Image (cartoon, rainbow, N blue to C red; front, side, top):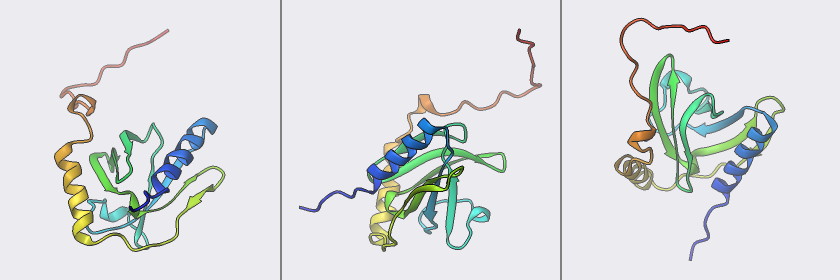
Length: 144
C-alpha cells in the first residue's frame, strides 16, 4: 500500500497559518502543459498564485487537486492543477513557509486524467460560483 503524500496537509497548514497571522499566502506552482495557466504570468517555468481569501474564490486544497477561481487582467478564470505541481507555499510579508523537493510529476496521462476528473466532478458547486455582472451603470450608496 502506497502512503499518501504529506504535501497537501502541509500546504493546508501553512495556508491556515498565513490566514491566522494576517499574512498573504503565495503558492509557487510548476507550469505544466496540462493546466490552463495564464501564459503571461509564467516565469522561469513556474507561476506564483496569491491565494489569499480576498484574491481567490472557491479555493479547494484537495489531496490530489487544488482549484480556485481568480481574476487575471480583469478576466475571471477557473484554475486547477495537481497538488504534485506545487513547489512551495510561503507568506509574502515574512518570506517564511515550506518548499518541496522537486520531483517528477506522475505520468502525463495521470495528470490529465486527474484534471479531467476535476472538471467532470465540478468541485465548485454551481451555487458557489460568482454571479455574472449585471449590465448597466453601477450604483453607489452612502452608508453611515
